[in-house]
Image (cartoon, rainbow, N blue to C red; front, side):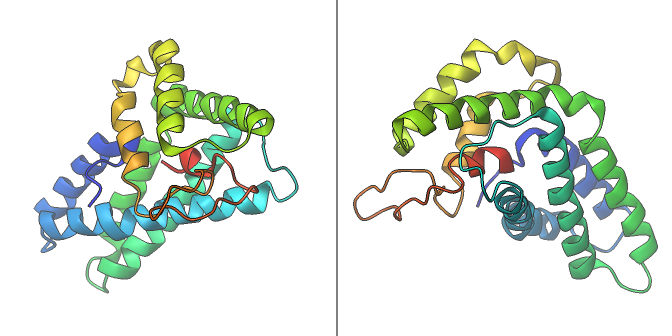
Length: 201
């Protein structure tokens, strides 16, 4: 099970604690759902948005505004899935307010440096792969770490460790489409979304 929710992990844990303290929903139940099914919803909706948005551009250059919109799609899908799983006639209004407050925090200006960094990093990787082809998992993570270390000051304001971000991507249940195939472990990559998974976290 993935144990971090990217840059929003502190906010998510606070949200889970708040919901658990004010309802009959247990913190462990909520945590298990968010870090397993919830993460899948969050990443999957962003992945689909990326594919739909860049149908004709295999190696897009991303902006922080695009990244913000993609995250919004992910959080809205997460909200719907959360309410569908846990809300009932008695707690729906309260849970709706609480999950919206979490989303508002996740989309606050405090996270814009991270989104700008993520957009810049993905763009650099896309440009590199447009010229040189897909990267292996090891090559990708090495390049991400190198680029991250060069611009880490952009996200220090929120104390986001890029090691956690790299780990989250490397632990994703489904291998990223832009990874070159590794014998007996990864599928053949497709070219239409080369840096897709880096934008989902």
